[in-house]
Image (cartoon, rainbow, N blue to C red):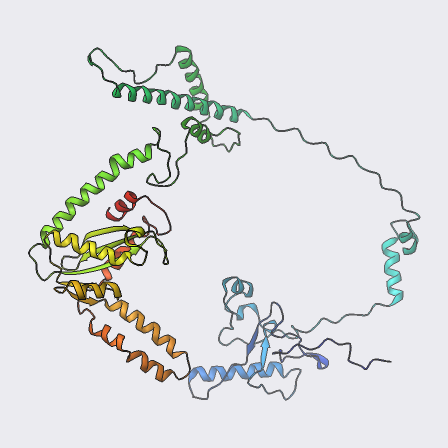
Length: 488
């Protein structure tokens, strides 16, 4: 059976196609699935008499005139499009590849007009006859030796290829003179480190020992080097000084940092001494525990006491509180509750808790608020007004146990929840009824009645934001390290 004409053609993809054409009634093949091509609708005219509308009408007529070169009596419809192949690159807002990498679409600039004719049409191919094909083969194969392509395929006149010996490997590069200079410098520094470590151990041993006659005893701080070693060091220093003015990039198998780590016999991991080995060489942990932590805690105690003295005797003091966890989600290990005095605009007290102290991560905020109230009450301060977010546990606890405290909600937290519910309701069908239900909800009306008129938690939220650079939530610190990072 003979096939009907047209059955061997590929099915045409559905979608938008470019309406431009070419000579002899050929249509443009670019569509919305073509790679590297974008489609653009004809300018729409609203007939409102404005200057912008007149410019669009002028641009639309030029587009129609361009298509009518090869398609007479063409009139665009609402879905007619032209592909980007008929426009100059200067007509677009940006390059197509740049837009793909940034996730943005490109668009035509106002007033852009197609000027490239027959750009999206397939290039015509000239059929090659048998005679032309034979002539091309003879011209190509003539210098090679065989008289025909068949002989070339048979391989009758092909000579066997001679195996070439593999190239000899290059000799390994030896270290240059610069490498030797740096090795000497590293050895010299390593000797100095070893001598200082021995002196440190001796001085520590001397301090720990009980010496009866301190005047007669002179502890040795540095081990004196021999005259031979001093001469070697002077010679090495002279060699090094000659090459100090030049910069080198030398790769050696000797690392100063690795050798120093081997002499220490230990590695420091983490911060604030979280995962460090507790040895005499752990200088970072000793430095933190003996100097930094006590200095921060002493300064904070005196500073907090001065703030408490300012607030004593003020019965109308307004306070705000909020919690901050060490990780995002509902499985935090540590949580800090902060008390901020809106009366003097100062942070007065912190409480750092662990999740096992309150039973769960969600209960840490309520437990922290209770401990802050207890500390401030024992210090002789009165909490007349307290502003928080809409934490149900804190609200119930203040209502039942802190009857002398007026509890209010922060304005920003209530507005944030209201906007979120309104946006969700506006996207569904019957949005008018749903928006009405959101606005008239009983809990929401009760929350609006408890909004704070003047004091808010905005300053406290800003303080928590400034903690992120030196107390990030996703980094683990020790207990004392967290306390000092919050209070510094």
